[in-house]
Length: 443
Image (cartoon, rainbow, N blue to C red):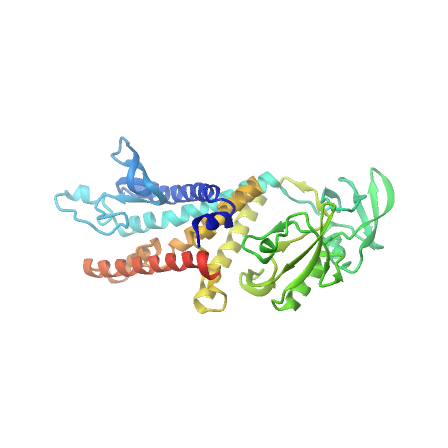
């Protein structure tokens, strides 16, 4: 694969790398600052706080004697505490240090202090996720359950008679007292191209005929999907699939599933043009409401209703509860995904490397501020949880060593640590190479 074709495949290498760099620097800075500040609170002295690896390109030493630096390779970072042999926090020599000075090393600190310092990095990533979701919820608001039109989608070649602020009283004769009922009724009208709306507009009751409330409109196209490869774009309107007329988006999933991966002939409307496309659905593993995964055939597009609800600004407690709830659901989904990949019940293609991450980051930047912040929150959570895996060299591996020490009353021997850390590094490099090969060749 040529480098130029690789870059063009994800919309420009420079933009993707820049987006990934911003995400990594933010996440790594928060993670390492967690280690640093909790270690400082616990009396453990940090000699170096580094964003990136390799040769420093900027350094500053503060009044506590900690050297803050930005290094040449920005894909990671570390905090090296007093007494550490290297950035992986392997024990080094403390010869020549007094007992008081040894207390400020990682090895000489109490077990509780060492464990708190190690745990703080992933914990700060998780806190960042909750904080970002909290801010997003306050920024964008939460949906109001009144059956009032808050936004309207543009439909190519169709006139939508609804206006923002209309209160929908019924759809095709079925009363819609709230937005939840409205959404349920709308999804039941998949066989109708036109629907009768009874609305209240500024105190006046009107009866209108308009498009299906769940039109076959493409709202977004998933990266690396069949839809992206076929050239589908947001705003496209499905007219027919394999010659079958399409009137509602909810007709699409059963047709895609029934294809079992066979090519599908699509007729779409894009602006004033009618275009014929062919795409082949792909198997994909999707998180479900229970935190597990469902394997289905997908083409990689999302749809939605013709109109969206109004929104309201939640209270601080409601926003906090919703942000914790969203973070918890994503954490369960991430952890279950790891288990399912190891067990072989879902595809290992769900493990992405740096190119896959760069694609996601670049797409998030293009999609706007809210999407970028949501992506940053998800990546922060993923990295925080990944660091808690019980693999030597990761934070989770150090916590396992601490648990061993708490049970036996002594730390692992230097020889055992050396072997385990080398083993952990081998596993980590292997996982990184496997994920990178997924990006390039396998998935």
